[in-house]
Image 1 (cartoon, rainbow, N blue to C red):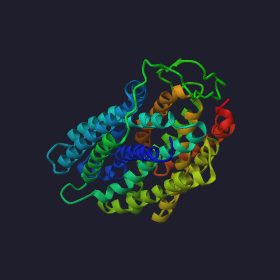
Image 2: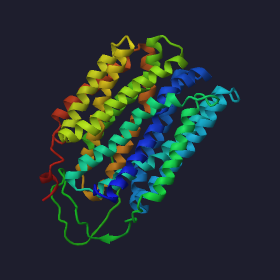
Image 3: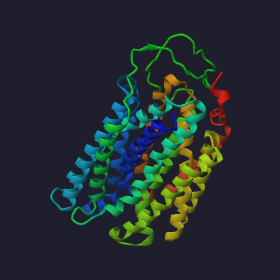
Image 4: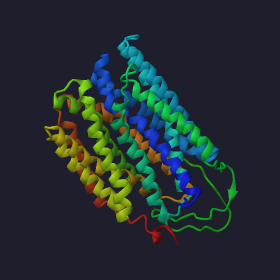
Amino acid sequence: MNPAGGGRSDFALLFLVLFVVAAGNTALQSVLPTIGREIGIPDLLVATIFSFSALMWTFAAPRWADASDRYGRKALILLGLGGYFVSKLICAFVILAGLKHLIAPIAVFIIFALARSLFGLFGSASNPAAQAYVASRTSPSERTRALSVLASAFGLGTIVGPAVAPFFVLPYVTLSGPMFAFAAFALITLVIVSRRLPADAPSAGEDRPIANLEPTVATGPRSTHGARTRTHRRLSWRDPRILPFSIYGLAIGNAQAASGQSLGFFVIDRLGLPPIEAQTFIGITLMAAAAATLLAQWALIPMFHLGPKLLLRWGAGLGAVGSILLAVSTDFYGIVLSFAIASLGYGFARPGFSAGASLAVGLEDQGGAAGAITAVNGAAFIIAPTIGIALYQLWQPLPYLLSAALLAVMLIYSLKNPLLGSDLDRDEIQTQ
């Protein structure tokens, strides 16, 4: 996208969309352990709430990517925001009812899980549509940085959401306060985007020249002359051009989901505090992680012009180190520092595989690639949170040690795989 003028403001709107959606999606990580214990929902069932939503997200995201090509990116972005708002509002009211003992704990669990599934089904439309919006308007040399910044919105939101959620625990609404707050943020964002983001014309069925149909690493140069029809095929995560990035992203996502989901319980139990009193410490821990993610994606990546190859390697390496340190941490300061190091790694890794997958395909497959990577991100939360809590109940350091082992394997994979080791952001690779 053109960084000047309207292009910059459009990009800022897309950044806001992904940030708000991600923040609201993961805001529960810091308060849900306390909510579960206050209402009387077992820890393992608390983790499965994320699994229902992630399953719907993984199923729906590639289909929304196709739909964004047919109906326009803006329309799908608005649909995602609308689904997010409705889901979050239902969640807020049902948690409030549960905390006030108006409905039984099992009813709270069922309704809450269904509302979260609604988010996974419709809220997943925003992410691939926003990525495709950016990818179709940037050159290969610009795309890594543009998608890195856009990925930082989603990645930063996943950290900032849980970090600020405890501070919306307010009188009367108590632990349901964060959900009411993020529902309000979603509604405000929906109104702003509907009024300010330029509509993009649907391209389905149009026969037009494609001016910048880049060659890809997998298929080599292709002609850009003559009329070509834009195809809207769904791109599988198993497509050879993006398969290594999908594998890497799935592994990174599972490691982050398993360790992140258990962090709230880890802080409560390691510090030996009542759940309500531990909320401030959980918030501070996640604030430090947010700062580390921000440092990676807004400062270090542009400062050192890091491309996918280095981001994948540094991301897995730092994530593994941070996870090991977290497993052996016994005090609050150790937990904060360790989780910040791990988050710095995830802050490198996420834009690394997102941008890498985009650069590995041509312009006509940007929507498909964005949908596939979004599905991979969602798939990481299907079983990893539940497994993370189950492992935590067996032995508190176990989810962090296994995450470190998985990240170490991905470090080796990023060093050995030819596509992950390619300089995908170099102009000579993407142009004739």
